[in-house]
Length: 157
Length: 198
Image (tube, rainbow over all chains, first blue to last red; front, side):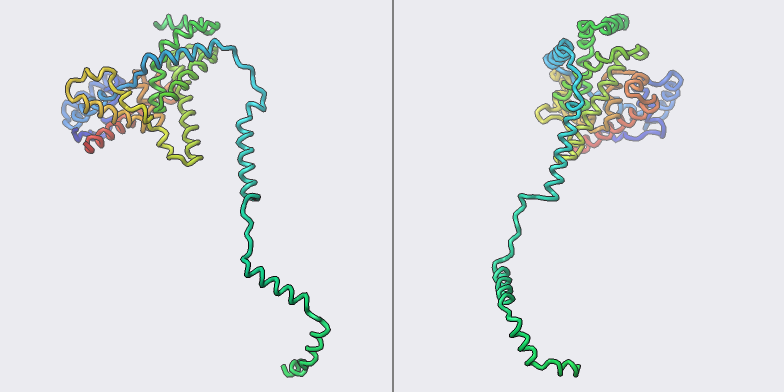
């Protein structure tokens, strides 16, 4: 493998087009005279020719070709399908829209998500607090407050 | 052949499917090869080539004969291939299966040997090396951007003129030349890299 990946500026395109016979006579003659005097462009041209000669076209087998031909002829022989109503034509888009709607709905409100239950000790503490609140005797507690003589203390503050 | 083709097209326009069948028979191998090179997949190339011929038949009324039938047909096939590649790329991107470039890799069960010389025994010296080289080059063709690949295939494999390729792809002659030069340069570079790995 040569290292001939460069040639004079502007000549790569000319060499490639010349390879495919897409240069007119005047351009070809100008290119040839340059290549005759330029070793790097000559090497580039030779390397290019080697590369492109190794490119081979895919050749479909006879069975593959016959199958494709038969497929076309069968479809041509079949009666033309009736024009589908707009609902059927839009069916794929509608299905897709429905899918996204369900996905968004499940993201926002997911009935299948596991319910977060508080730990047992927290539940027991909350129940104890509730019981104590239920059993507060308001009248007795007021008596206690009066007995504490907090008013005097408040004045000092 | 050109007059013959014109007569066949005229008959096909009148609904003669047998006449169109002759055209299909004539161009099917080229259509299959082009679609195979574009998609890298044999089954897809079958579907795309068949669909292109069906669409061509249904659109024959719009074929004025300004360009050759083959250029006109290749435009249909190229557009189908591009649509197919876009859809495949979109699906892969949506589902995160693989990068878009993976789509363009050939089938695992359809090795690049399928591209190789139909008569490999005719290569007496260095046959294996030559086959590997061809496989590397064809893998490099698959990696080319779609439009460069199409231009290269139409020029190198089909031998179409620059003007015909421009008509088929709907681009200017200058753009065709630019794509061709880029494609060939990329192939040359990939072959150089292949050589350095050897």
